[in-house]
Length: 135
Image 1 (cartoon, rainbow, N blue to C red):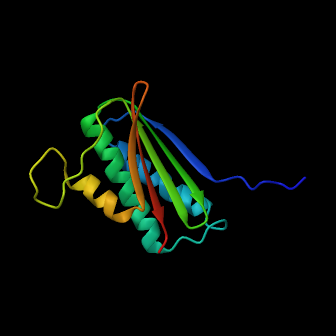
Image 2: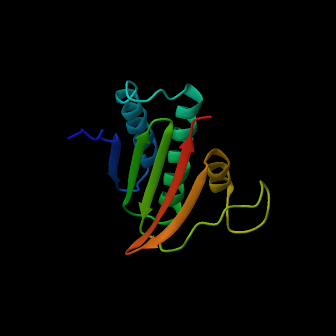
């Protein structure tokens, strides 16, 4: 029977307090370093992943104070990122920088860096998923 390669994954349960984003970014960088032999992510892609992680977690910490969970999965040149938080309210991105409305720049940046961004309500909150694909 052929062995199915395991998809590298990082899962972090975070408390949402100050320092959460910094801690998560550092852990994601270490995770990407440990997986460097399985995937050849370019430096720019790694920066994009770090920025997406930071923006999604910052949104969770601001708009859904309390615990959150980060999951990062690697599959070749594709990085799937998911952040679960305690708010059932779905995020709204600004149409463009400076546009009025409830959305801010963070989700706008995420949507420009990712090939897919979506949010779904789940029991006890929501999950925001984003996919970064190396260009």
